[in-house]
Length: 222
Length: 191
Image 1 (tube, rainbow over the protein chains, first blue to last red):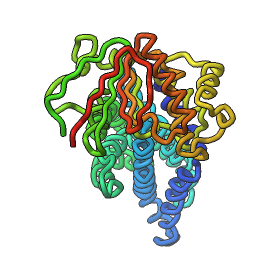
Image 2: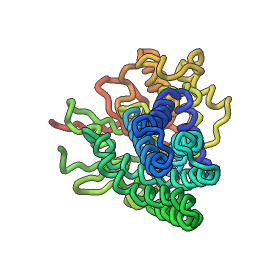
Image 3: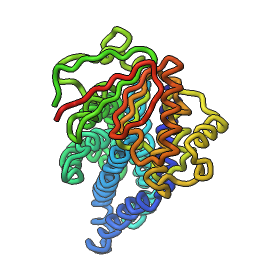
């Protein structure tokens, strides 16, 4: 079972590395969107500090969402998804392998880049640390929830827009607790409560997403 | 699409599904493989409903559909190695190399699949029959399509050997290909 997980995971990572331009565009999107705000809003530091958590998190949600159609669509087109359904292993484990690969390729780079981008908003050292931590905890949740949306919209016309409509509302708790954590640092109350809630969201997503995604994939391929 | 359909497939037997385009050959194969549910009726495997067997059925099944199930950016060898790992069969560089040679792609083994021609891709997908062929039931959708005469002959021999070793196979094809089998059933789907 572990070998099947690792096989799916490493296949996706190797394959993505050979097509790294696709993934770099997502990262570049994140950088550009975040950078537009200080340019558009102006250099007033109080304002920038206030909007920073929301801007960084919304940009991260959108960037994570942009990469979602890639999770299953290519596999669907070339027939590897069909083969995945016939693998004598639980489909949930294989789905988790794909989600883990998606996180490594989109979530982790977002978390790593965010503190650097946060400097543009004049965030302090502690806030940048919490921003990194919050994204590190929150992005797996984005990949898990996103996988459900990607599987449900598989093979539909206008799937990209539908994913947004399906997934973005489900991202709201992550957005609230994630940006709340950084706000809490500014307010001096400490971020641990928000980070715990964020982790709780992730655990719920971990408990639900593999099964929901597996069921959606089976329906999509009927 | 079709109804009132019933057949038994025994050890060493081949079911040849025929019919025009759109007569439901692929749908029937997908139902047999458990990818799609039948509107009515049941598929049984060794006397038990295949639906309830889950992974036990999957372990004995090798399905090759219309799509080749190959990743364009991976090489032929890599594709086969992942297929073997997912199928849970031990595959070494030697066994993969042998499978690749068997379909005549030895000189293309380390080329990304996207650089291969249509026929070569099909052969790369079919290499699984040599690598992972110990599974009892083969379901092959148009395995002979896009292949040259030489490859067709090799594939027919491989299917014959599989049947001889106590396997069973279901396949669709528009071509007449001679396959050695204890019994060949022809199933003609009307449009």
